[in-house]
Structure formats: structure tokens, C-alpha cells
Image (cartoon, rainbow over all chains, first blue to last red; front, side, top):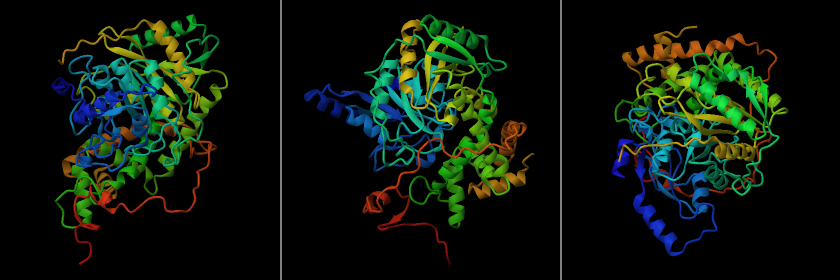
Length: 452
Length: 95
């Protein structure tokens, strides 16, 4: 486990406790559960009872929740136990895991490559076999982009399918927890275990639980899959285009009907996101004031200065940037021009999907516009960093389920992913398509364990 | 539109984040490039579009008006940076 330090995936480990749980399981094994005796490390954004939860931030450096998030509780109720807490971008704001107070995470694919973000500790630990499966959160691509960068499977469920209770909030109308796994079967098992109605989350959807893993079916003959023309962007490497073509071919051979579609407002998704997400973040992060929990600055002569210094010392640069953007777009005189405008465009983006989903069962796109990049390559230019999420953000804005599948690699050998976007609450169908795709794709993610 | 340094300082004040001159300099540069990107939205006509307010086709649930939690003062105070047995302690507010 010392070797993991080179990857910097764990913020906190709970090995002793895990060993105890494993022994308990061994003495009385029960295999009639979804996750029998499975040790799992989780993103450090999920509150865990009695175990430090940092959200990758200095401001929560000493925060020990006295409660358990619903999603992790669901995992434990299904037989799993906690192995540790995984590094992530600060408050899940980032696409490369370079904004964490606990340092950069390295992609096991190669030295000096980012693992994606914000669930970068999760993708790296999973790809490096430091946890058999994991969970992340996805506000604009934070599960799917790191999955794509590490050659793993990542699913962002329908908004409301997994409870947000006990997850450190970033942007409440976009945040959704989801599984990150080595294959589709594991993904279906994890989703089945973690999802479900929760009274404590006002946006949780109340419906019967689905048995995703039992209902996995690789017969996808006759399904209609949309290919949106707007997902071919300027300066996109040729390899991404080729990967997309390869994906289409595989699906066609499986009896799927490919249909060209148009999602005309796609290019406005990212600008919309960078109004909505910071606006919600500035409001959610107002709670970190140094009074009730978390870091408190010792500087300042009065209460206001204590607030200002606490937040200045406690938050990193990216978080400050986003709080300021959010504060500005919500401020009097600018609200209509930015926030209200964005909510209107968000409606148009959702409508694009609604209209097309009367014609197709799912939509196939690339997951990211490039493969993993080097640490430091994009840190000086926030907008170029934001462009990483160009293909993943629309599903968050529309609340739709979306799955990133490992599908191939570029000429440097770095993995690339394809994304399947499904109808609301149609996780089973995209998992089925992914299942059939996985069996016929022939891509094997080979990672040399250089860090050992 | 462009944000000048005074504006950035004002927003930082609203957000209760103290910034020094070097911060203001880099924030002004970064925020202006981000807003330039965001302002692509201006080319869209949205006069007749209803803003999206919720992704869910359900109204908020109500519950019985009964106390269902509480009595956990100790747990709540456990993480406070400074406390006095029963209360959170902050720097003096009134003289």
C-alpha cells in the first residue's frame, strides 16, 4: 500500500477497520447479498460516520461527520465495507484532480498523466486495482471523464436516482452519485446497491427498485441509436472520430439501427453550465464560514474578517474563482442577464433531448474530446480545462443517465471512451447496450504496474 | 462586458473572501476570459423560453409536521473550531 503514495489516490485509509470487517465476514459468510464482503474505497465527498471527510479541501481538513451518506450506507447494507477515502478535486471542481488540497493524483496509465476529474482518486485507484470498484459524483462529467481517461466504466445515473443526502454539495440541481467499475456487470451491481428512494433527499425519485444486474441482457437487436452531428468539434483529434466510427460499426453489427440526429443547442451547454454550477456552488459553499465546523482562521479583528480570512485561507484558487463567478451571476442587476438566461438555455438543451428520444433509444457520442493530458498542461487556462467536459455536461443539464465505456486507445496507448446517453430512468437499456458492446469491442486496458 | 479590479474586489467582498492585490490581478484575468466564453449565450434568442426550474416531474413531498430529529447537541458541537460546552463561540460581534 506504500506504493499507492506514488499515485496519491487515498486521502484517508481505514485498513484496520476493514480487516476487522473482513474477518467478521469470513467467520459468518453471507453470499446472498449484492456486495458480499467486498472492500470498497469511495470518493472523499461522501460523508462517512466517524471518518474524516475532506471534499479535497483544506476547509474540511478536520471534519469528521457524525452521520453516513445514504449512498454509502446502501453499499454497507448490501455487504460491502469501507477501505478508505479517495482524493478528488476540491469540492469536485476540476477535470484533472489538480485542485485538491491533498495533491495531484497520478493516472496509472503513465507517469505525469492526469487521471481526469473530479473523481480522479476514484478512477486512478480503480484502474490500479487498489479497490475492486468505487463510487464517484458527477456534476458536469466528473465520473465519465476520469473513467474515459483510465479505461474504466463510469455511470452518471438519472438525476434523483441516487440520494444526494450526506454528499458534500457542489451544484445541487446537477450533482449525482454513480458507480465506477472495471466492467458493465460490476457497474450494474453497484448501481443496484447504491440507488433507491430516500426520504432525506427532497429530489429523490420514489419508485420501485430495479434489478439492474439480474436484468442485464446483451440482445440489443432492433434498438435505435442516435448519432448527434454536433458532437464533432473543431480541433478534435482524428483518433476520437475513428473511435466513434468503430463504436458505430460494433453496434451496427449487433443489429442496432443508427440514426443521424441533431441536438442544436449542444455548443451552449458548457457556457450554460458555467453559470448554473457556480451559482449553485456559491450558495452551497456559503456554509463554510469557520463557525460551526471546518477550518477557522485565527486572523482578523472581528466576525466579518474571521469569515473572510477563513474562506480565503480555506478554499483553493479554482473554488474561489467559481464562488466569485456564482456570486456575480446571482447579484442584483446581473441575475436576469446571466442566471435566468442560463436557465432558459438549459430548457432548450433539455428539449433537444426530449424531442430526439421519441425517435431513438439512446445516443452514442465520444466521452471526451481528447485522451488524458499531462499534469500542468492546462492549469493556466481555466477555459481550456473546462472544454474537457464539453461532451459530458449536456446530460447533467438535462438530468439524463449517461455511461462512459472503455472503447479503444490513441496512438500513444492512452485509453479513450465512448458515451451512451439514455432516456430518463432508462439505465437498464444503456447498461444492456454497454454489456453487448463490451463483449464485442475487444479492447483490453493493459496497465503496467510501474508504481509498485 | 469586462470586469475591472474594483468590481472583482466588490464581488469578493460580497462572497466574504479576502483577496490581496496579486489575487485580484489573476482573478481579473481569469474571470474575464471565463465570462467571454459564457457570453456566447447572448447570440441565442430566448424571449419565449420558460426557464427550467426543475428536472423532476414531481412536486415536493410534504411530511407530517412532527419533530423527527434532534437532541444531538454534543454531536453537532463536536466539529466546531471553538465551543463553550453548549454554544459555538465566535469573535466578539457587539461592543
